[in-house]
Structures are given as C-alpha cells and as structure tokens.
Image (tube, rainbow, N blue to C red):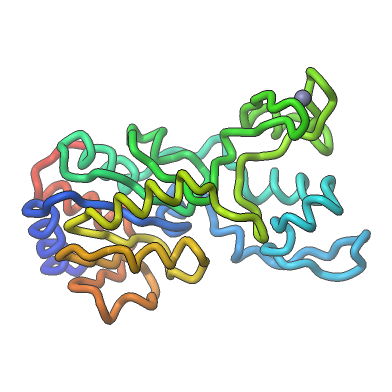
Length: 250
Ligand code: ZN
C-alpha cells in the first residue's frame, strides 16, 4: 500500500467541500462481482456465432433472443448474495458525515444502497428493479432469477424487463441530470474502479470543475494525467485505510 498517497487522499477528503464519488465495475469486484465485459464471448446456437458480452446485453439481442439474454443475464449480471465491501461502506459513512454528497455509479448491483448510501445515481439502472413491459407491474430480482426462461408478468403475461440500461439504449434523463448537477457542484471528485471507457457515462467527468480530482483504479485511466492524485491499489483497502486516518467509523 502506498502509505503517503493514502495520507494525501485522507487529507483531501478531510478538508474537502462537497465530494462526489464516480465508480464502476472495479468497486464491486471486491464483493465478488466480476466485470461482465471480461467474460468470454458465448457461442450462440441460434445466432451461429460467438457473441460478445456487450452484444449479449444489447437492446437488439434482448429483443431478438430474449431466452439467451436472460440466461446470460442470470449467470453474469445478477449476484443476489453479494455484500457491500469496505469501499461501499466507507462512502455511506462519508455521506452520513456530510462530506460525500452523491455516488454516481455505472454498476447495477444496488450495493451502495445496501451499504446505506442515500443519494446514488445509477447511470445504468439496477437489477433490483424489474418492470412488466405491458402493464408496468414491479418485480424484484428474485422473481427474475427464479422465473423459468423469459420472465412473464403474473398479472398480464407481458415480458418483464430488468430496469437496466442495455447497450443501444439511452440513459435515464433524470438520473443523468442529477449526476451532472452533483459532479458540477463537487469540490472533490474521486473516480474509482473504472477505466472510463464506457460512454456516455464516462463523459460526465467533464462537468467537474472543483479543486481535487482523484483516481483510484488498478489500471491507467484516460484522466490520470489531469488528476491531482492517482492510486493504483484495490479500492476497498484504500478506503478502509483512509477511514482509519480520518478516524471515521464505518
Ligand atoms: Zn403486466
């Protein structure tokens, strides 16, 4: 662990105005949720070729091959037993302390809320919410996990779709606006567990105009050169150590 850098981060957070955390898949890997994009492509009988993970979760694939979509979805995108790690817990504590104003996340696992975070902008939606495409009835993740094949509404028989933004679909405008507002008014922006490759989400960073830009990611990101501080360590242990330095229980 790069001790002096952890100290620097603690110092920044401890003296910061409104702080916003912008996170991606790397935040949840320590909770046992692998980045689905790292999965191998899957040979699909119906398509007669190997389909990439990104294509599996695209809108057109969902429409054309819903059975295959839900098979992949259940296996690679939903982790009902996952628990928040030290990063999720620390961010929830920083919000309670009045330091953190919002979490903006590309993750769909709901772990920030499970850890206690209140203001979370889920750019790509959540596996915890699912709606009938015909009548709008709500279903939880468990319903979709246990349904055989394509989940069907118990009220009207319509297809139940996860409230997840698939490739080719646009982001929810209200979520996007909330995230932009939070980032634009932040004094410190910590980018964590994302290499900032997925657009338009990654483009939100350009709205930041505050004093401290920090990147915590295992690999290089496109924003490293602009950042005041770059830490290439597992994010859970980074935040655990920072909270210790700040003397905030979490
Ligand atoms: Zn329905």
